[in-house]
Image 1: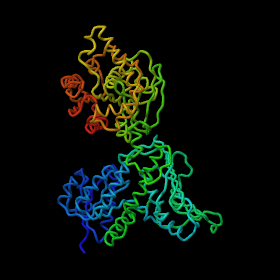
Image 2 (image 1 turned 45 degrees about the horizontal axis):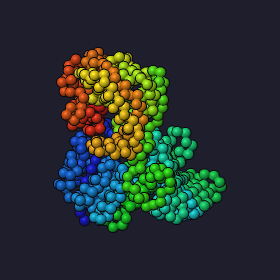
Image 3 (image 1 turned 90 degrees about the vertical axis):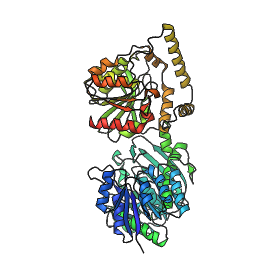
Image 4 (image 1 turned 120 degrees about the horizontal axis):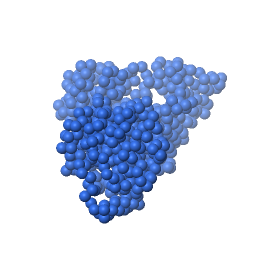
Length: 625
């Protein structure tokens, strides 16, 4: 028979090599296909020409494409490996099914939402396509040996399965899958769980919980327990990855590097007996990935269910999302799971949970609240616009936290910071920012501000040059003329009272009503913007109206004196942006250290209207300036 023709989508670079930004799993998949006498890699696709060329050269792939669509149009493939981030798994699976492939081998976790995970399995079932996910630890020697010991009756009848790992989503998908393997793929009846988002961070574009508990009951009465959290938090049980508890003994897997497997039963005289196996829980090099590929090829040839089948992966994935859902409902969830989203993602987007720790700092005679991503990384302070709060920077902070310690301040009168009756001038806010930087012990942080916060950041860079390393200004609140000065005193008072009434009206609305209104008024905004935007409107003090009673410092005088590097992010005035092209040109002329990034596809809320372009400009400036 002719060899199966294989295409690989998402090449990456091998883990821990120059230029690698992930694990480069495509290279591990390729090793499996290269080992099989029944397969040949005929094509690869990647959006990076450099990565694509390197992969094709390393694995002697004859055809490389910068588009998966182009690859499907030009190649008749039997097997496709998807080595992409999870949010791309479902749409690319559907494309591969439509292209007529016989099998899809996909990286884990399955998808960002349970609905997408179900859709992948359903589409492949309907088309007769074999779907597998790379839960390759099923082939690991310690796990296989533990399974054999369990079946041999070494611990009597299985009663409970326990696991400990870093998180439910990325690592938990492996351990949930392994617990199903040990219990002969018996389905689960119910899940009760709790998660805390703080300190979880993100991986492959997906947020993780910082700590979690998942308790569940298999239909045969076996109890399951997953505990998640960082091993460096002083948790003494962190050394044991999986524990099998039986009526007559215990098997532990992944106790340490030196003890991958051990047994405790009546025949070990009440002592732990280390069981000799080849390799630890991670295997040796790419061997487990190779075994996974060889198994899926054999299953494709024989028509049997592959060890890493999509249906088995879906059972593990259901437990992940059911645990999130239980935390959202504050109740037990009976399976099958009847929601399609990721409750964790939804709760973050609606502001019900926050993935970072917060705190307060005494500065400039007030108490300021902040959120902070943390870590020993260069600090970046974010200053929000009028009526927002620190968490309105959620998407930006999530995008920067892997490389920076991001501090999201609530300005006076906003969020959870103090709200004095007066003191809302640009000078006051800049003094607040400077005092917070000192109080937090930040060493010349970059400061990124939007609108009111942009004006604050600019004035602080001008007035306190010793404190700020870089200033990034997202359409700062600069005007050539004060827009409120032509008013008469009576007109100005009317304007201020109308704004105060608007603030009070917003504060009286529910979060859901505010989100619905924002969704209607700003349809281009991502869903993750809405929850904290709505909360910020409920938190805002009416005293902030004092901002409209001030004489604004002239931006030209400030810009000419700022000595740190400055990025001025401008947008389309016709869409509501404040800083005009002539103003930006003049700013660059009078301040040679100032760069301008123009994003004409957006208006005043630049990041909310064209986030990819905005983030690219911010990251490039932070990294290179």
